[in-house]
Length: 398
Image 1 (cartoon, one colour):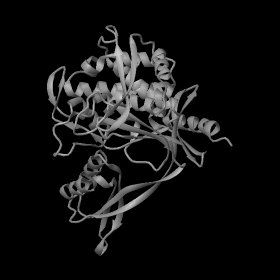
Image 2 (cartoon, rainbow, N blue to C red):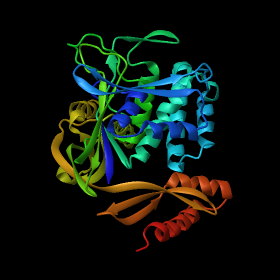
Image 3 (cartoon, one colour):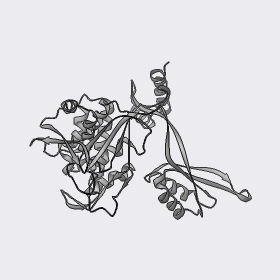
Image 4 (cartoon, rainbow, N blue to C red):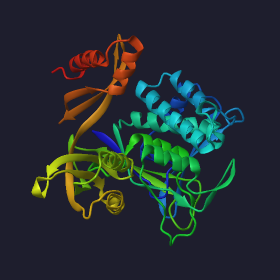
């Protein structure tokens, strides 16, 4: 399976991601075709080879004419995407990213999401960045995207509302909404300014798994930002390659603690709070019996190694635990993909699990089945049976 890994060493933005795809082999003509499918006019591209603090790569300017610079709403972007002849997967992913940006802006400004203004994000370069990255990855045959932690930057950045702290409020809100891991640059560095833009955070927070895959490298592209600071390379790398259908994911840790005097309310709160934290992959509880046959609960948390201190501290603060066990673990991951299934009753996404290139199971997405059930007025369990039966025929037929 072909995957991509984004190493956001010097930050991430929509144009840097696009530039990294170009540097990795995507043709400018393909990007121009994507813009044509959107029915967009007044947008041109200028590709140039350059260097940022010793890192050579591609810088991409998205040039807009006066008409293309006029502000749009996020709903306008969604309408343009939906009216295009792009693939349904690109449409769904891009529309979800624009909805995420709109919701983040509405939370920041305390306004209704239907009437929120995007300001800097409302010009057509945002549309081109988002759709260009999603469609470009599809053209390159990339099925899954992985990413490093995202550097936010430091200092301040100028916006339509004046100068604000970095990360900008919209960026910070998107990071929180997507649970994307982020970090500030070392304190020893001078003020870096904005390293992560709202568009970059929205794209990667929506499509990436934040871990490093074990892969056979095929190509590497470097996308360069506009600024060229002395303290760090304003660049990101995009590595494209193949992974085995079944692969080991290293660097995970399992944290466990036994609790015999916590209420159901506290345990529920702790589980919900933990699963929302950056670096936490899964949380579960197991009934156990402790000394003197007292019933108890074992709380287990699967985390990235970098999240150990924060996770352990939270558990010790929020529960009655006096001690926590930690150990390194590995997990084996099957190839996963999402396929769209069109039926007479509606359209439903289906998650396909494959081993050694062979599909072995198909699972309908519950939220899609629920939506169909509500639309046509039949029990959701009946919808799931119909979708499951057709998915088995369509995707698992030998």
